[in-house]
Image (cartoon, rainbow, N blue to C red; front, side, top):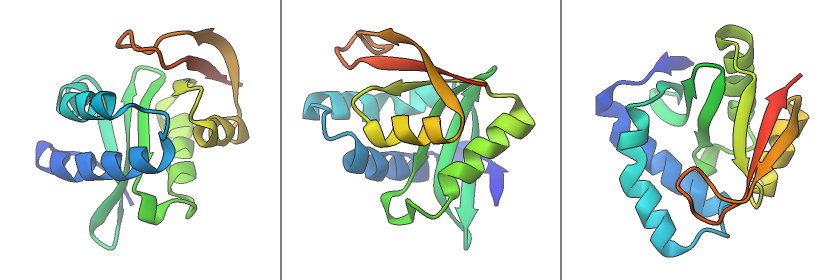
Amino acid sequence: MIRKIEVVDYPDLIAIWESAVKSTHDFLKEEDFSYYKEQMPVYFEHVVLLGYEENGALVGFMGISGDNLEMLFVHNDFRGKGIGKTLISYAIGSLNVTKVDVNEQNTQAVDFYKYMGFNVVKKSALDGQGKSYPILHMSYN
């Protein structure tokens, strides 16, 4: 079930984020991991957050701003079960999402977004925080 996220859900989102990032972002330096983890509640305030709930527990979430998917994370224990696909399909079909930025080094995510119909339109050498993690800007066709 997809539902709106409330502030009381933030600790669950942080746990989901941490599980997902530790499984998919092996390129991330420990100090950058800590920095982004600390910043997550700030990022949450700038997006519409929707979560995926299974058996009463949040197991995935996404953040959207305008037509841009700003974040999508699925707890590692629930990866490969169609949750990310369900979330992105909802974002595209119901919320008119057409863009996503993804770490180039996160090849699983790049392949996932390509599978879902996104194509690379541009590349940036630095991420949005000015750190040297190349970003692929992708668009849905």
